[in-house]
Amino acid sequence: MFSYISLGTRDIARAIRFYDAALAPLGHRRIAGYDPEDRSAAWGLDDPGPHLWVTPPFDGQPASSGNGTMVSFLAETRAAVAAFHAAALAHGGSDEGAPGPRPEYGPHFYAAYVRDPDGNKLNAVCYRDDAAH
Image (cartoon, rainbow, N blue to C red; front, side):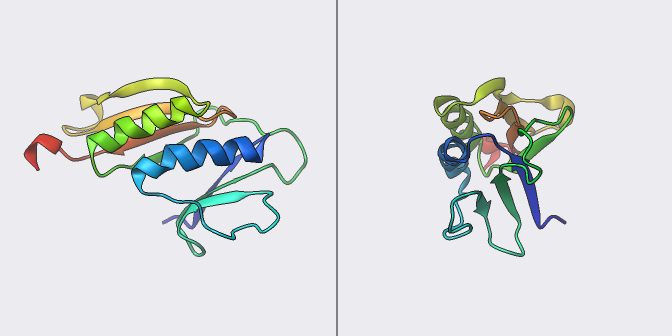
């Protein structure tokens, strides 16, 4: 369904450090050579995607997070959810919900929630019952 999702940042170097660390446990790497001038960065698959693109806003105004906006990343295991959360916190993110089951969203919904250094809300979710596999 998606080609890419774009999130704004006030500091691209800080954003790169954060997303390199937070997305590595989920198997997502930065796309090499995406922006040769290092004004923006992307993780996932090159065009046509899907990928997450992080960039300063084109209008020159400071980046701001959207109220009610969240990007969710699929995790293969519950351990990957926990590793995403830990890496995000260790690299400037803030906690929005520790790793754990969220049965109100499904019988095997296991997620963690963070905000990146610019305030964008993210989560990693595993839909598998690790004990059953």
